[in-house]
View 1 (tube, rainbow, N blue to C red):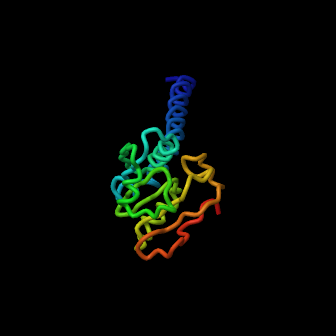
View 2: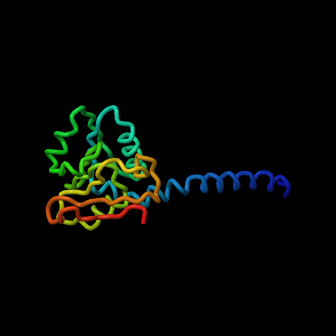
View 3: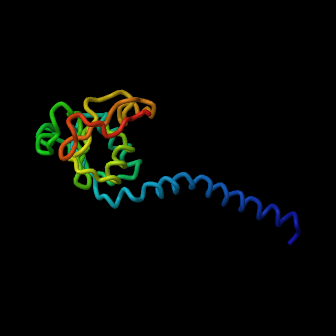
Length: 164
């Protein structure tokens, strides 16, 4: 085979292979960095069927690598009461994972910290619906507190500060 034919045959194949590899790398890195989320089991999220911000938070949780099961209900208060979420910490959805309660638009860094450190608390909450929190604009610079509750948590104890 002539050198020019070799170049025209091999170079496009190599370029295609390299291009496909570079396109796939971000997804591979993302999957590897979040593979340990599955070891914590399924995250059960209870939300209103009409709440768009809750749906956005669930979509972001899936992007973070969590295995999610959603229950839509018109009475989310029952779940919050059964889970022991103080009424001052209530938000629009309640999630449970690996023995912990996650109330509201909690950032995923706080959930990772919770699952890694495993403090003797009932759960963590982002009271209300702060702008910029996951599902509410998802602005990583938004500042708000994630509060620990139940178990050994002190009243109003800040577990994580978002946006710092």
